[in-house]
Image 1 (spheres, rainbow, N blue to C red):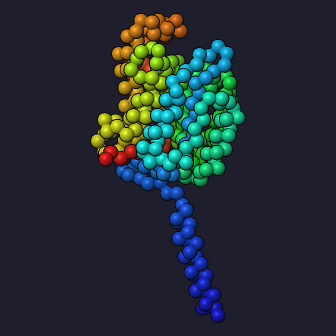
Image 2 (cartoon, rainbow, N blue to C red):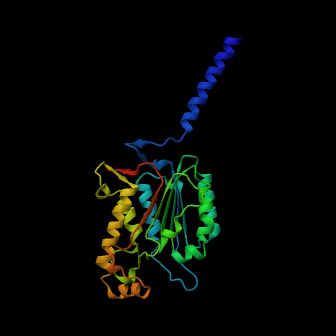
Image 3 (cartoon, one colour):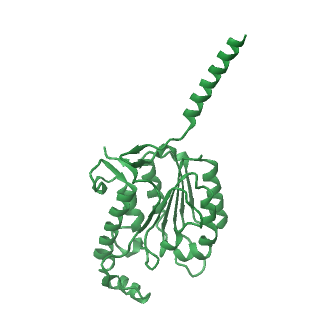
Length: 279
């Protein structure tokens, strides 16, 4: 009887160990770099185009959220793991999206939060820096990726005090810069946010594989995006006197600096974050 009981306990223990190992979300490493498990990545994509009051509309048929969605699917993210919200974004929307991320992910999973809107809207209507960082901190047992594409967006990627969890935060420009969203009536090559346009291309672009290791990392994608955006702005946007004068009216003189704008990345992940393996 005792032998049978001991055998049963051993079998039960083996089953538990097998089940537990199958449920654990391990993080793959290559040469000290972290590999993004795209099929275990949950993402929120928020895209604001229509504004009330004095803020100008940025209507580009939601190309920014479409490009972000398509890029994530291309690297292996599942569509059912993507939550997309377009317009009517308020504080409740942000909290609901964070709750959705928490509900649909586990400790060790990857979660991505992308937001594009007027920087002034993020700061004022969304009260970003007094609400988001503390809620984001509660998810610090996940591998977090935050991408903000907006004017002066560096001010929106700061962590709350005591947040030591892993993650990457990126802004499309620094705290004093203006991000560019191309509108169809302007007649320039790129419609939509220039940063999002180049970033969503970079993550699967072999030219972004700067170290030629057959992987495009998040860090490489941002560097490639930065260079592409700066070249585009110089050759197309700042070459139009009307657009350049608009910057001057804001006290900004991009033609007098070496590079403009400058994406900011705050990286808290060990090594680089590998997004895509070049085929």
